[in-house]
Length: 228
Image 1 (cartoon, one colour):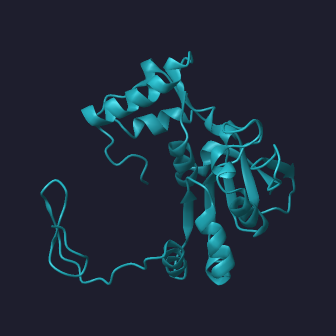
Image 2 (image 1 turned 60 degrees about the vertical axis):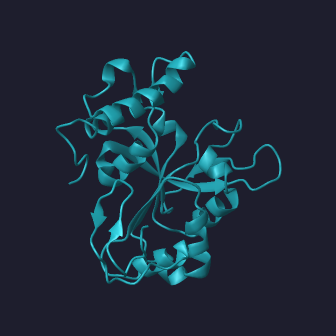
Image 3 (image 1 turned 90 degrees about the horizontal axis):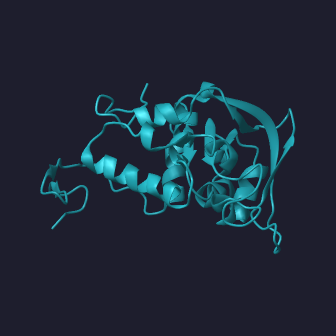
């Protein structure tokens, strides 16, 4: 049976042993853990790949910690139609109240929205040579698009990670982001308006092929991906 951190060595699910740790267990609350990490020295960059619930709670409960965020990259919202309602993208629709809180907090926010992610597309000819498990997972993901009559499949989370690692691959524009919390058909919709003073930036265009570095990171000869 696996044992708790701080006691004897733990056993992983594949039978391997993890080294013993004398570190205290992390806080049970994710927001408290995030606040503690943000209060440490050094750049504090965050990549958010889902709804912004934890970040909004951080802003409300630990504003001094939220103020230490150097850069927040969020994959969410849409400067166009949605994918889970006619107007709303899923990560915004899942918790629009949280997205609205973050939008109004004045954080250094870079938004990688649905429209920019859909410009990173790969097809059967683009599949990299990789290990069998990764190849199976990637092929299954591609099949989602092919089964719907599309020539390929868009890439989402890795494009946001690319924006974190290589912002120079994107054109950004300063935009104010508003999120609808109205109980009607606009619920979860994001609207972006030009605002040179805003600390929110919207990725507006790719400056290179976004799919290629994401796929190259999966090749056998690139096990460490996009690290720099």
